[in-house]
Image (tube, rainbow, N blue to C red; front, top):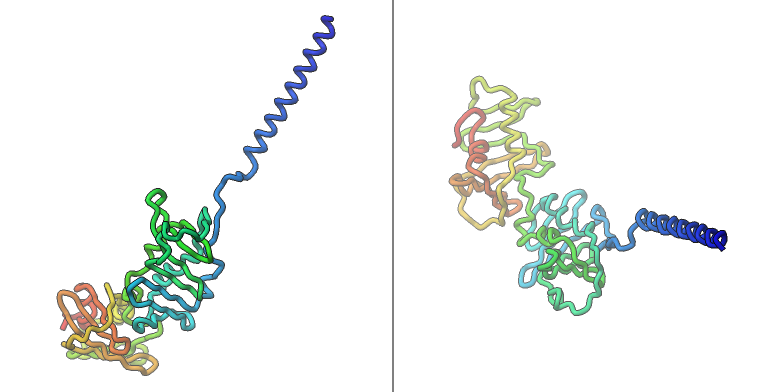
Length: 287
């Protein structure tokens, strides 16, 4: 009887040990396997940003903003025509890479403020309607492709309030290579690969002249707006390497410089420090 009891106890210990090993093995399996409760990532679109040719932004009660890709650059075509800032265009296209942890049925849209959305972004025919921002998660609800997705609010914050915010801030386009600047009291021109200023300024090196020209090539405005019809108080004539000429209008010198590009019907606002560099002859004082 004692031997039988001892044998039963031994079997029980073996069974318990085996069960313990099974439990441990299952625990490690559960620990090491990919978690099934991790949130899935739902992309809002399959479009590729580098293939997009058309963007339209609609705000309820406002004029639609339309952008078209021309070769390698973007242009605003409505409500006015202008070169678009590539950085701001990429911020619009960032929605194509957005993903959400949840995909909700596009029903009861009123609770997401998507029944009549305030803002709609259309990229190559694909619509993204922007609704309310959740007070709990801080995410914004966006309707796309028949579903509603809560996504990071930064995508909605990247949408411009008006078309002026999308205008490229650089005064000169990348392909515009100036070879002559003509002001009221002086001119700077390139001849045989060298820059010369008239009237001549003593002890002025080519590096000095190159820096002055680069200031014009790289001039970026604080803001750009459609031309408002203000009377000109001066002019600056530019000639480019391809023979094209451009006359910039001076609308204001202080407290900030305002220049008009009549070919684009835009006016560019510059800080006063920038004005001093642009309006002064190389090595001299502003006009």
